[in-house]
Length: 443
Image (spheres, rainbow, N blue to C red):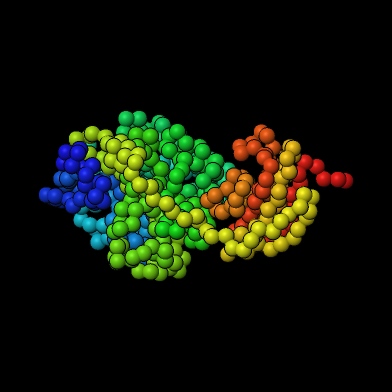
């Protein structure tokens, strides 16, 4: 397909082209399922998926399987890659029935909850790198022969929930392994279950520059970026390098368009007919781990790269998405040096407003959890408007309920006269004490 024709097709929403002249020979060699196939030009959909359910951290119950079938990914960075008795025969049969006979896969050996890569295109090399922080899985990688002159290297990770510092160590290990083993001239994607509490966590910063970790990020139809079971934390990511990033295009499913990728929640997505055979309750199944994340790209067979601006000109209408959560009620006015007690639950922000007068040099806001060992409260601050989980100027997002924000001339945005709004989110609900001090309180 000529570049001009492809651009017209992309603008018309024809993002997923059928495979033409497919010939497949499937075999299993040392944990890698290999095949030979002939493909037409096609966009590339990359998916991160820790979507097991049930009591065995496996895909046996079927909800995660239906999500794969409905979203039709080309490359899957898969976690907890368990099915049946986990024999090569059982895994190969599941891959074929779930994705199609043309798909190949790699699954790491001797792991309780293995990582892996599933691919529409031939996997020409694959293996695992040791994760010294955990004993029941490693980092899985695969070199994939996608259309065009460059190969795609896919790295599937599953970081620990233990602490942000441990996740940062795991990310730094992945960075060193990638830099030592993957050619700079090929494409790279790193994705999976990072278990990150927020998009600014040090694990993501450790990967920045190797892959693009800055936003904007995938969301669901309500604009929510959270991917864990409660939808409150962004655990799962698909990141790509700066060669692949410019080739991203919106995820198009039915009449829906997601400019920065999709966080898929079957309880939110509509209409479900777009993603058959997914059922409404699949993403909320018993012990469903997380939500799937997908991003779409365009790679041409002849190696020609099409920049995002060429496919979607800057005058293309933008798609607006709502904020992550509608804030309830009205903000309570908080005087300087006043102390208030409250209870933050999981359903809405507690809102406050403090008015900074002309000439003030500093605003200090202090949140204290009154049962800090039992709760996890988060402090959000925004100038001129109420904050939300996605709209704020300051957010410490620590691992406990004791948080503090100081605003003065050294910060961006700097302190200015007018209303400053405070939001308290009960990630794990609990009681709190809040105070705001403009300049200095008396003794």
